[in-house]
Image 1 (cartoon, rainbow, N blue to C red):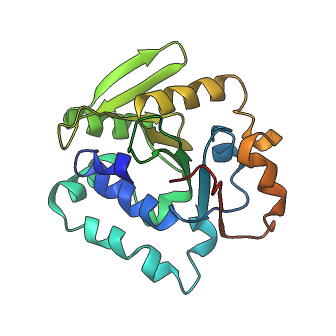
Image 2 (image 1 turned 180 degrees about the vertical axis):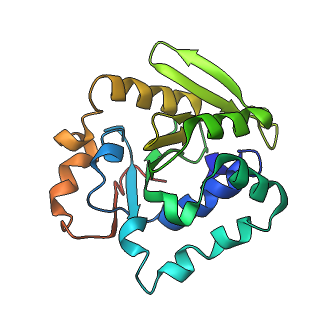
Image 3 (image 1 turned 45 degrees about the horizontal axis):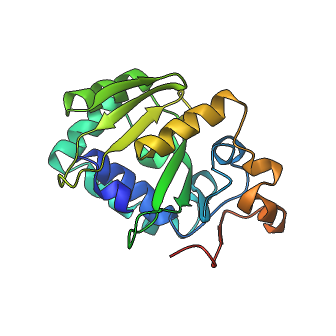
Length: 214
């Protein structure tokens, strides 16, 4: 959440809306996104929005996305990208990453599964000051700061199905993991050892390493 608060409006508003509901929970059936979770994550949570759209919780989960349609630049961003958060985002995965900085909260990596238009999203981000950065692992968009605190946020549209957001190091790691076939999380590394304890039909769940999470 600290990471997402750095993003420029309306990008932050959209990601906060989607990830805010998902931060405490994790869901089954999100293998593509979970394959990008670093094994060293201190927490991982997923929400399957696709399985919750028809539930009694849906109105609460999506209430804030309705506000975006009447919120100035956020509404323009949605129009420019063609993004319909309630229909187009199926799964959100949030991984908490331990920070070595003294008294600093943990960083995070947010992974979205759904239906996206990469060209339109990148164009909308660039028109709001984002800069394309290239690495041997792939490209990402460096998003303008909101508070000038020296930190940066990165967003990479990996395909028309997957978007990742986090600090540049976390996103670059996700790009490298994708190129190598996955991070190892789904093979049982790190918190991935606990995956089998999650019911297969769970719509949402979380795993937290209480010994390491702040």
